Image (cartoon, rainbow, N blue to C red):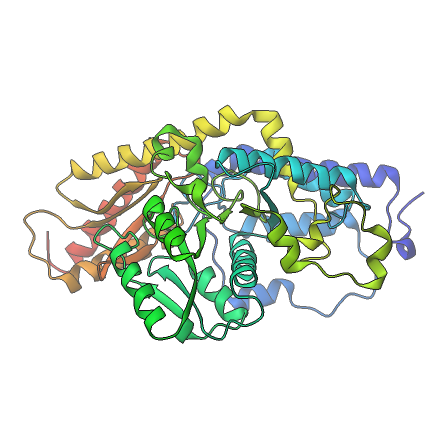
Length: 482
């Protein structure tokens, strides 16, 4: 039997051949990605010329469509798991989790309620419990939910905190976060109806940490002015610098002031597995809610974020709805329906990839990979500090380091240095050899490396820095400077 177009299905032989082609392409990608350029670029016109067409009325050969997609889509996209993809937060991923996602999608498992897939719900309960234990949160009373990413996890946390602390009336509620907090928190607050006047951005100190002195002052002032402080968002691993806020000190303030304590650990939370990261995260167990992002430093494919919470009942009391069409599948209290714990009703089976990769590789392998990432960033800092050409602007913290080209003995203005480093980044990106972009620290343009890929070698870093120096020499020569 060949492809039955009207039933949207292939024959058994066709499905096998098609599946083997996809697995072959994924394996080839994992095996050869370090030999390819990490970047891809194209104009809208170029993309339109390839893809823009009317929806096809007639069928096409499945293998031809697949070959086209592999060549023109998959191989023309940035490789965020490439050893020289240093920018934003790379996505190292792993093959076991990628195949697990294929299983979850192939079986089309509905992971919203217990009745549709008890194993899917159970594996989410189990893996959430693993994470609760890792972060020192109460396993029996605590809970959580896997989300599409850190943005949705932060949104879920803020909605829960608002419900628990403010009830239905949040007109005078105010929330506190630092100027280095992730933008997803601001976006979440706007989505759920908070005005700018209700959001307090507290300046960070010289080390880019949440200033507890300024936090205390802001809370006192707001109470005197009739506002209702209800939540503080601290960060465990800021995106810019990897900085961890003073979690223990903030937790004490929250306890004294009776505020909800949310920690955004989407980037840095996983560092708790490493000895050289655990100390930095001291106080994380004091959180009322905690965001972690397995698709970052737990090496999972996109999309997978996670919200952990000290008391799982708060999620259900915030999100539960009981429409008539779900009344026959409620189950008992121990059978968790995860659609009652978050925004989504229909949910993909995200827990499977986390479960299978941890079962396959073991927690020790994850621990070693994270430790390696922190160490390679520290080695990079030492290398930069030994050079007369580089200035470290923010030291290696949780595998992130910020630096700029600023040769000793040269008399550059700040504007010239900013322009030079911006152009170095542009040259590196244009070459396609590495993804290395800038950020702003202390009003300076700096280069930022995020080194969470366990397959990035120190030789990759040194080669990239040499590339940067070569471009710097070219730029300076063109300006008549040595």
